Structure formats: structure tokens, C-alpha cells
Image 1: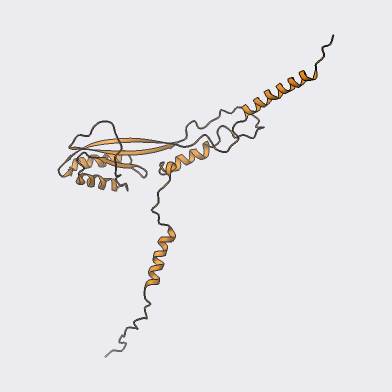
Image 2: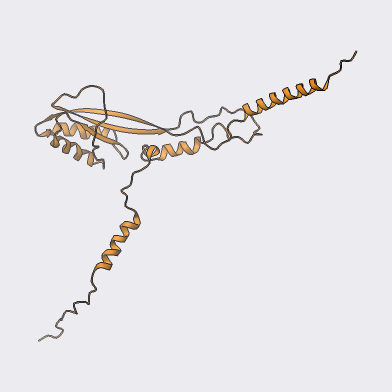
Length: 215
């Protein structure tokens, strides 16, 4: 005998099939937004050099050591140089600041915490360098050929953010941006205009008399 399927049984089967199909589709298409998970990550590293100091600050051999170290480290824009001096000698700070200034770097106010202890009579120069990269790129984890859900691919954002991380001059700007002085181009250009307007015209006090004839 042929079994008969009642309407409640058929409805239950169709409902279960619909739920399973919806579950599969929602699990497959999850990346519908335009925010890429591949974002630049900034890594900060500290490099140290201990120098011998004295009453007169840094001796000439120690200054040469510091200059050679800066050259070997390829000191450049974006690096931060700080001084950890237990004696807080202004002479030592001036000598280190002068050598760092040759590379266009100003000394930072505070030094980061580094391993070990700096004994009196020594000073530690700390060079902080930041690098930016995009982990897990390129990402070819997507293996499906069709994209019926119009979702973004697994490697979305790798190219743009990878180039941004490679080209930014100071990786710290990816975290908090560049800090300006608060003075805009319009404000600085207005200084010349205000100076021109505040000056008296040349003919207010009359023309200077000059002799045109000769004896």
C-alpha cells in the first residue's frame, strides 16, 4: 500500500529544509561590509646605547661612539631619541641633542622604560623606532568560484592598507595622526597682509627734498 503524507508532515519537512538552507546561506556569506579585517599594525621597538659620562658631559670618544651608532642605525624621520641620565646633566643632554640634531631629530622629554639599571656616571640613549605592516596578507583563503552573496573577498584591503603601511613616513601617524601647531596657512599668510595694512603710506610725512642740480 502506498503511504499517504499528511499536510502537517509535509509542512514540517518543508520548514526544516528551509531552515537548513537559510543556515547554510548565512554561514557562507558573512563578509558583507566594507571594513577590511586586514588593518595596519604598528610595532614599536627600543634600541639602547650606554655611554660613559663625566663632569663635562660626554667625552669626544663617547660622542664619536654615539654618532657612529646613529649612523649604523640609519637614524631617520619618525625615530624618537630619548636620554635616560640618572644625574640629569644638562651638559650631557646638550651633547646628545646636538648629535641627534644633525639628523633632524629632537630629544624627547621622557625616556621609555628599558631593561636593566643605569648606574650613575653612565647615560643611556634610547632610540624608539616604529614599523607598520599588515599581517596575514595576501589572504587567499576564499576558494569559492562564484560570489552569489556579493560579499568581499578574503584579501580585501590587503593592497591598499599594505601600501599605506609601506609608504607612511612615520608609522605613529597611523595611530593618532600628525599633531599640528594650531596655525593654519591662512593664519600665517594673514600676518604679511596685516603688516602691510598697518604701515603708514610713504607720502604721509611728505616727500624728501633732494637736490637735482649741480654746481
